[in-house]
Image (cartoon, rainbow, N blue to C red; front, side, top):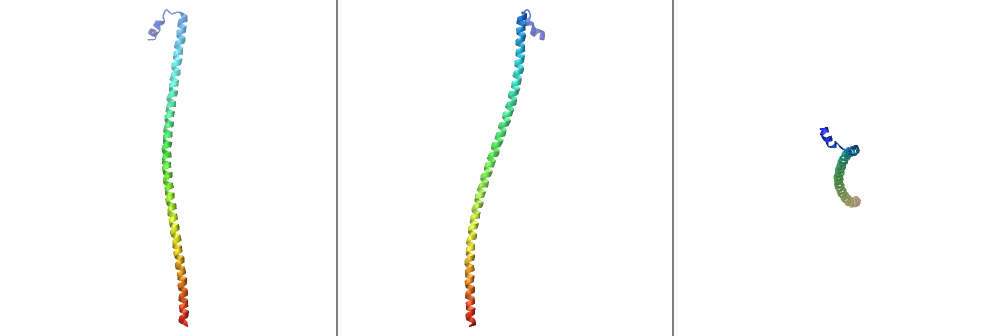
Amino acid sequence: MSWAVEEWKEGLSPRVLQKIHELESQVDKLKKERQQRQYQFESLEAALQKQKQKVENEKNESAILKRENQSLMELCDNLEKAKQKISHDLQVKESQVNIQSGQLNSSKKDIERLEQELKR
């Protein structure tokens, strides 16, 4: 087969044959270089896809964390409101206890006074 490929070169001058040989060598070199660049391109393309997937995953994770953060902020707000309500209720009850304590003291004094009057 190689012989048939080389047959067309018969009868050419040595200078032309040398030039053909140089051109064939250059073609082989360019083919190898092209293969290398194709491999590099495919490797870079794969790395790019991997990075794109990584970025997409990070975006999704970021969105999840943002939603979780929003949910936690709402929960904190609700807890703060509940705390304020409980604090207010506590103040109201303390006020009521103070009023009833005052009434109790007043009633005790009234009872003591009435007991003193009964003894007389």
